[in-house]
Image 1 (tube, protein in one colour):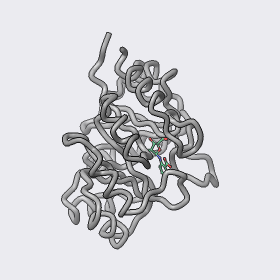
Image 2 (cartoon, protein in one colour):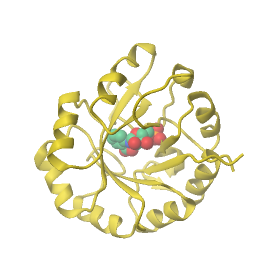
Image 3 (cartoon, protein in one colour):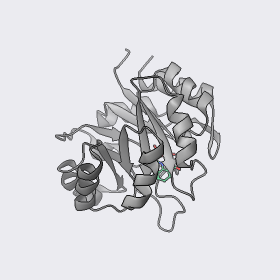
Image 4 (cartoon, protein in one colour):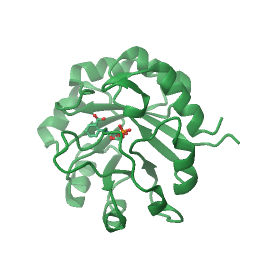
Length: 215
Ligand SMILES: O=C(O)c1ccccc1N[C@@H]1O[C@H](COP(=O)(O)O)[C@@H](O)[C@H]1O
């Protein structure tokens, strides 16, 4: 049965892929500002990508432990609707970013085992949304976008006061099961819709969104 699952396609780098994600029914478009990522874009590139997005989609800037100067540089050029903080930002930093920019903030939290769930409450108290992602391996080049899953049963039956999104190794083949086990109403994907690191595939994007929505 079709479900009203909101999908974020993250790590978009080309205007035609922005259009493809929008056509396929994405609700959020993620742009990565992190130099080590194969999906990294500059503020000027982000501006062009944002201008290719139809109205109504939420354009998300993903940053990793960015300082105010870096956030200022992005927001001076690109019409961003939401900030995703994907580093080690403390709850106080999340609150400060939210105050300074007046934009909704989504904080990513990495989960490997039940011991990691405790930090969710602190971030739910200060962020507009929380992204529940797989914890990156120790010494990983990237703090996200690694195509790794975590044990979704850790989230079964849990409820939080804020909107949240599930991420980490989602693909067209596993997203329906992930939604079933976690009760997620929103999902986020990057490498699961790529042919190679940083190379998005239009058909994979469309198949992922159909699978997430149970079509
Ligand atoms: O995608 C990246 O390159 C990235 C870089 C730095 C931090 C986070 C990043 N991606 C985020 O991680 C999740 C999960 O990715 P995946 O689907 O497992 O590849 C992704 O949705 C992004 O929000």
